[in-house]
Every structure is written in structure tokens, then in C-alpha cells.
Image 1 (tube, rainbow, N blue to C red):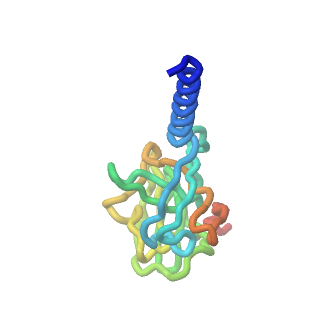
Image 2 (image 1 turned 120 degrees about the vertical axis):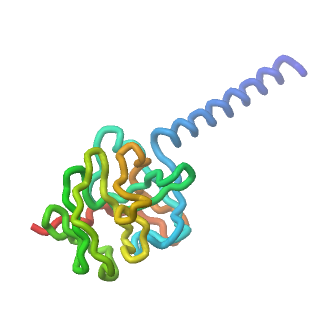
Image 3 (image 1 turned 180 degrees about the vertical axis):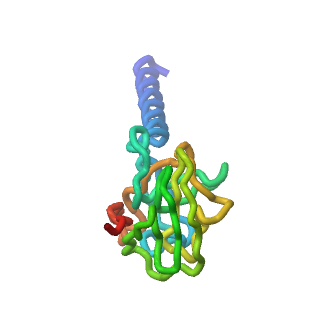
Length: 180
């Protein structure tokens, strides 16, 4: 192999290594792809949709009420749910809605009434209380298997659905406000 061919090969190898390193850094610290599995977030998110999850904002702030987050449920499984309350908040799920600190949440994304009441409970320090939008078909903070989600298990905020292309959209996090 000639010297110029060796130099070209070495340049290609360096370029590929840099690209792989950048991709790994981006995935580790900035954004990750997530596959929605199941129907616990209907009608907001559907089974099989792929979305981008931003990791950046939770380096400098805690998740806020109404945000859709991805978190580590088990060693091999991530869940996606909506943040309902943070540390110190009292949560009550009643047949007519969700109450945080005695104030009813406005939840336009809910399509059916709750079947099972829950609480009241106080959200412990450094955790959040999460629910799926499809409340009657969701494994969420009401279930001891999931419980309160510690902040260090949260991977990021769901931002953008990119697949399937016909359902591509930005996700709105403005919902879930409290009645005055």
C-alpha cells in the first residue's frame, strides 16, 4: 500500500471514530430516541410511535407538572408518563379528576373518567408522581411496581414524534394546569 493510500485510510478511520464518538456523546447527554410501547399515553402518544427525548433541561431543573417524561422503570425497561406532581405535593385521584394540593388539574388530554380512586398521598422529596394519559390502562405511580419516580431515574423530556411520518409533531407540555 502506498503512503498516500495509507494516509487516506487513516483519515477515513479518524473521521469514522470522531463520528461514532459524537453520536455516543449526543445520545448520552443531549437527545435519545424512544419507542412508545403500549397504549398508556393515548390519545397523546400511540403504540409504535418513535420520539426524541431531550436530556438537557433536567441537568439544571426538575420536571414540571404537565411534562411528558421517559424514566427507567427497570434495568431493561423505560416508561413514558406525564408528571402530575412534585415533591411535597398532595395528590388525590378521584372519579371526577386529579387533585394536586386540593386543586383540580385541567386535563384536556383525558378521554374517559377514572375508574379507581387513589390517595391522597404526599410526594416524597426528590421524586415525582406520574400518570399515563390513558388512566384506566396505565401502569403508573398509583401502582406499587412503579410508585413515585425518583429524579435520578428520569432520562428526559419527550419533545418530538418523528415516526410514523404522517403523525410527526411537536409535543405540547402546556396541559395539566391547576384550576384557580
